Image 1 (spheres, rainbow, N blue to C red):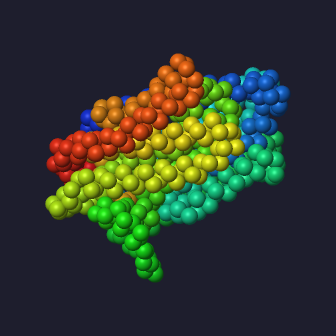
Image 2: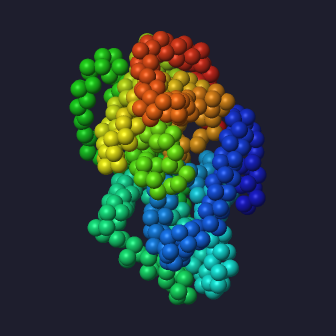
Image 3: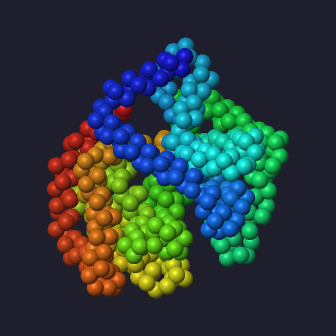
Length: 490
């Protein structure tokens, strides 16, 4: 039975209308998967010596202490990026296939998901080092078995939480608060969680706890999928109280206001779009890896601009990369109306500008690390608004990825979003500000580097109309290709 499913999936891939871009996407993602796996393996092999000789701590106890953060971050990361176990059920329901078999195959695909396998590249080398340093083999194996169960528990918990946005925000928010309290020595959550993870190593029967939890989560998620295995299951809606939204304050933007209102409603009402807000919030904390000096590799001055671009441009980079795909369901209808591309693109531009300004204000907490750090953030915000906002709109003309807002498939990583043109256009987003800053920094001073990046951002403002006219012409030339791509169901 599973052999037939695999053959169908294989034929679907090779007969896809986007075969070329699909292969490119697979190769591109495969390269990064290998790189992350290699770095994880190196980290797993080296961290024992680092903890013992540099920090003078017991390695296994130290790892167990921070596993709670590892698992919660893994869950939030999965929620934002991992694709749900999806399969085209319409033709299968007309054939003599048991529903349990269909769901089992869909779930089986997640077993070998990158989000599950990548952990092994860290923990297996670490475990080998533990055993080579005299740790009992049985205890280490039981500890690994418990971690595997918890990681797969996250996999099935992510499936259960897929329709519960508020809950994942609450979990992530609580852990951020607890992490902050831990960092400033107000409250240490690891005091209560570390004994459990240490128990997986010290006590043999402890491993049964995560296994039972994982089996329970598997059963709940499996039954949920079997129950909803109908063509109209996704169409059923719950009765809700109608809420009116007053967005009249956007009328000051003129004709652009209509599109702005639609975009704001889209973000509030659809999980796929709301996930971009989650990503932008997570990117606000990305700078901690760079500005705190905790990671030796990121202490170089150029990395501060790299981090600042992400801190202020999380929404711009995650939402902007799928313009105009967010409107793919009604894009052909919209193109048949008397709508100017410039008005449509201006609404997206203003939305990204507003989000960047909000991120910059929220990032004011980085003042704790000094004015130089926040100056980098301000300069990066200026660059994001002046340059990157135009670049993502430009690249969007070549993105032919229809987004189904009613599905649970993630927006991030769709194969048609990657092609040579979008890849080349991604270089100015990150590489150019780093190069400009490096020129100013090494030629004169850090402030000269900031000035060059700021000048690039101001130049984007100065030539905004000319750039928009150029982008508008590109969208017009790609119009019919985009409409044809959005009509493809495969």
